[in-house]
Amino acid sequence: MIDVPPLASTTTLAVLCALAMGVAIRRGATCTVAAVNEIIDERKCGRLLAILFASVLVLGGLFIAKSLDALPSLPAGSPVTRATLWGGLLLGLGASVNGACALGTIARIGAGQWSYVATPIGYYAGCHIAARGLAAATPFPVHDSPALHAPASIVVLLVAVATTLAACALRSRHAGSTPSLPDTDPAGKNRASWLPHGATAAIGITFVLLFVLDGAWTYTDTLADLAQRGHVGATASRGLLSGALLLGAMSARITRAMRGDRVDGTRVTPALLVRCLSGGALMGWASLMIPGGNDSLVLVAMPLLRPYAWVAFAAMCFAIGAVSLSRRLLHARRQHEMRELA
Image 1 (tube, rainbow, N blue to C red):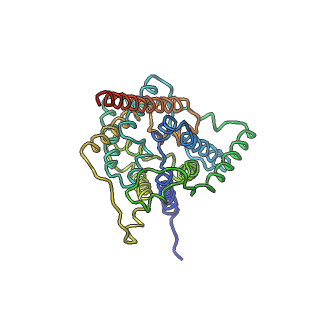
Image 2 (cartoon, one colour):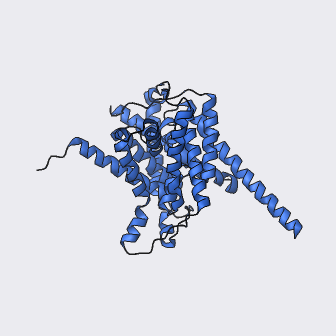
Image 3 (tube, one colour):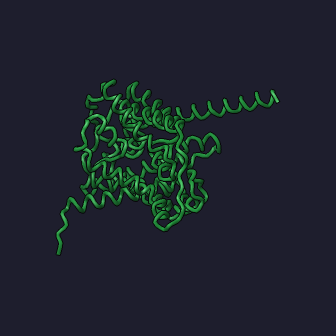
């Protein structure tokens, strides 16, 4: 009988969770930019509520982990300052320029939109520059989470609600009524559509498992740590999880390629590369001001009911909405001028 070291077992489980999260991000087309645009274009808030639903699920999972004495140390928090607000606005601006938030970037790479590979590179560059231009290396004050000190009755209620919603959402995850991100393969497009709540339920559940197994982890935090520390050693295991996340997002395309089906990707143009690099750089800069990217806000700080995270996320959504409305008004004005000239 072969003895498997506990560390190897934990690492394997964590990698599997990251793979599953990548699949859910891709098939649910999870993205804050898409969520805000849905509100503007369709007067619906299903995607935004689904993102917030992921935070509720993570909170319920953390309660369960705490009751089982399996909750690891919580990450550092931050007070609400002007930098929090400006960082949130800058994060929304960067996501608008990029065309997708941090989670949406993974979904687009998984869909074969290869220009978005430049976004993590830009994110790293933005963190690297900001770490030298800001006092980002100064440790933020650590604040204990009020969410984990609620009365037992509230804990039980929240856990029950989160569990029920997760079960209902996962049952409907394969419904094809939700439009997904553009895919270069029509056959794969039909398979890449989960209801938003089903996808975010899967993201929330897998993240809680990752939290217990390997601590609070997001791929943007991995890039930020690497940019600030300047060496790979401390982030090697997190880099493995980032690779697994990306592999999960691309799993459908990889499967089709292994079957011999044609798998195309979108054309990479200099304009798209510049947009993704600059958008990623803005998001990276903003993540050190807040601190944290939008994935760590939604999956870590917001579930812990830390005020700075909610302020930053609201500012991010406001900035995305302002940019989207400005673009639509400018487009409408141009069309009006063209009709007058005709």
